[in-house]
Amino acid sequence: MMESPSSLALAPERSSEAVIQFHDVRIGFAEGEILRGVSFSVQPQETLVLLGETGSGKTLTLKIAAGLLRPDSGAVDVLGERVSRMSERELLVLRRNVGFVFQEGALFDSLTVGENVAYRLHEDHVNEEEIEPRVLEVLEFVELGHTMDLLPSELSGGMRRRVSIARALVDRPPILLYDSPTAGLDPITSQTIITLILRLRDVYGVTALLATQRLQDGFAFANFHFDPATRRVRRDSTPEKPGTAVTRFLVLRDGKIYFAGSPEQLLAANDPYLQRFLV
Amino acid sequence: MAETPLQVTQPQAGSPETPSLVEVLLDAAKTNVLRIQDYSKLSFRSLTNLATSPRYMQDTLAQMDDIGVGSLPIVLLSGFFIGAVMVLQTGAQFERFGQSSLTGDVVSIALVRELGPTITGLLVAGRCASGMASELGSMLVTEQVDAMRAMGTDPSRKLVSPRVLATLITLPLLTAISVFIGLVGGMVASVFSLRLDATTFWERAIKVLQFSDIMQGFSKTLVFGFILATVGCYQGLNVRGGTQGVGRATTQAVVVSSVLIIIADTFLTKIALFLADKVF
Image (cartoon, rainbow over all chains, first blue to last red; front, side, top):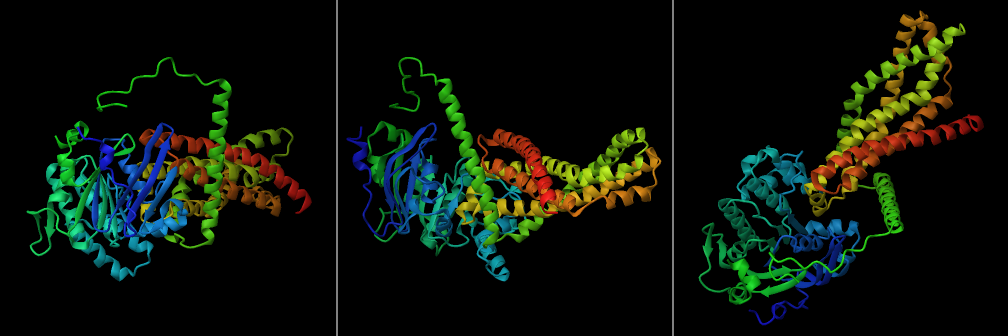
């Protein structure tokens, strides 16, 4: 049994470099309070894996970080801006620096794959000649260059998830929020998605907040890296070296942070609740 | 607190407090006031959005095609038969007094002032308000609306304003077509049923109309169009409960917009008659 799960919880770090910071965030609905004073921070190029059961508030945390939901109390800072106080108009501008990969992809079903990916570029009035190569580039990145003219309904679940990632990164946002990117996918497709997220992290240095129920996904981010030279995923033989991508875990339970720490700390934690994630 | 997910929190001792009737009524009142407030805000924004960029003209044109061209067959068909049935009903009464030539006058005024705008409004509400509610509702439950917001797009600009503008432009045009076809239907019925001369019917139908009659009909179409588009969008963007909620919102959109159109019609008629006396 852990001495005290909360003792491992991260205090809101005062670092001015933090890309995302939650300060005592609370939010509730008619059925009760879902988040009860959540505080954490995400440093640049870090991957913070949000673990928790269904209904523990993972998706809510991501939506609050993107300013899609406003907390009842507490404060949220993203890229140094106080998101929780911004008007919707200001948020629309800020969100262009944040990519959001929704659990089911949330692709616009009346638009083709190419139009979905190009959506943000059209909104920004990017030149038409510039749009197609950029769309093709990100679609090639997710290995779906051949699906440009297909409708989302013609794609498999895993392909939709990959298009969603392509759509989120077309503008190269410095932050990506992933909502259960591998949920409901077979192991092989899940592996493809994880590889893609590793590539984004290790090639573009994207900061990520990733919600998942699958601990193995989190350990994949902690133990593997994408080698751009060989274009292969490699297992890290040594613990994280300074300057390399950092992966941390944050476990939500009953609306609070139950655990926060490194993969090694999670593995070492002798807590029955955390052990269930390790099984 | 539950130790494991399989354990549930023990139920509280004693039965839960049953809310009193007053509390239930107060809650219902608060909910409805909140809905009216949200609807008013959305409606207001749908218009103010048109004054500033970005404007989605491509989406507006697509909606005009869907609402205008798409509704044309039902508007033409119903317009023709409403004009014809008006002639059959009123003509029979006028014949008793030997005044069947007045049929054209009555049918024309009724179609331009009242039946054209109202019936077209109700038909388009049935077809398009439901379509808007189901489309936007489906987008909401599949997180497409959130995705739009996450990509820096204001859904009220991208989804609501084009639909409202498209309806405001197309409903008056559809009504004008409906009235014209209604008069044609009336003329056909009067020729074959009342043995009236087609030219006489047409001349009387046109001559009896005054500018105030046309303005009354036109102003109604603008209000009806605004009601059906905003109600359809509001219901769609406030879906609760997944696909079942989408179905409920679709029904609600038709019911609420139809009832509001009929209520608005009463007040608009009163105002128009007052203005016709004072202004025109």
